[in-house]
Amino acid sequence: MSIHPARLNGLDHLRAMAIMFVFFFHYFIISKGEPEWLPGVAKFGWTGVDLFFVLSGFLIAAQLFARIKAGQPLSYRDFFLRRVFRIIPAYLVTVGLYFVFPAFREREALPPLWRFLTFTQNLGLNLKDSGTFSHAWSLCVEEHFYLFLPLILILLQQTGRFRRASWLLMIFFLGGFAVRYVSYVYLYGPFQTDDASWMYWYRYIYYPTYTRLDGLLAGVTIAALSVFAPVRWQTVASYGNWLLLPGLLMLTAAYFLCKDQQTFSASVFGFPLIALGFGCIVGTALSPASVLFRWYSPVTSLLANLSYALYLTHKGIIHLTRELLAGNELHPNLMLVICTITCLTGAYAMHILIEKPFMRLRHRVTTSVETQHLASH
Image (cartoon, rainbow, N blue to C red; front, side, top):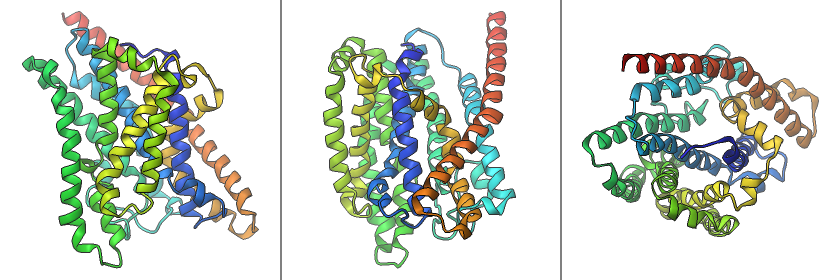
């Protein structure tokens, strides 16, 4: 299955939605609830990261599955080379901003540098004492996904067992419930009466990779269905806009279930419910019969292109902007508008100065590698 530009309209809308969810959620935390209307709108915005997980799971798995279906061997080196050029440069620049310029930090202290460089910051994170750049946790989860998914697929491809591997998705999905149950009862449980119980909930339930695979697995499942079962996928996709209904119903149920995120039910069942809901919506975005697929918007296309840079930098820029304007007694709505503009400006600068040059370099390097590979054969 090729992912051509026309198919990305719907996914661009969802990427734009995801980054705005995250932006407004973090803004109301940093602004301590200002403007007054924002918490009611933004408090479910943390699920934007889950939508990113579903999108990443689909896009990455679809590329790998397409090569497998075409009978082409997967190259771990080529895959990781592409991801390094896409992810690492902007990430390292942001890490540098946090460590070199203390004014950029939205909170007081950072975890050790090696945690960021090894993408282990999400494991055992002490959000209370070193919560600066805490949103890097999701990048750690995705890097772990990039590390293990191609390895698993290469192993299955080489052993000839790929066609019978659908059971792995079910094992990982059901295993998530078991892992969260154990983490909630035995790791988080002893701290439930602690004054800082929320910090332990984030440490043991929210941030670890092994508790947050649901969204990625939903995306991988959609990719597997669309690549290896195209007739069945076309039947599902033909419903187009109707896929929105179960998606919205599941997300509505998740909204009420997760009003108190630290309950047992929310911790064990909330993440998979959100993943399934967003999975349906991603299915809608991929369906030629849906309005999301057919509708092109330059606004959402721009936001989608800036989403990674905006995700990396928005908390630091919000904090810096608010500090610089603190003495002006601006109306909270105006402050929000100004912070939105400065964040978009910073993300655009990152996109132009860092992301695009390295993407061009990636094209040259990968083209050279492919040419050498063909010449050697």
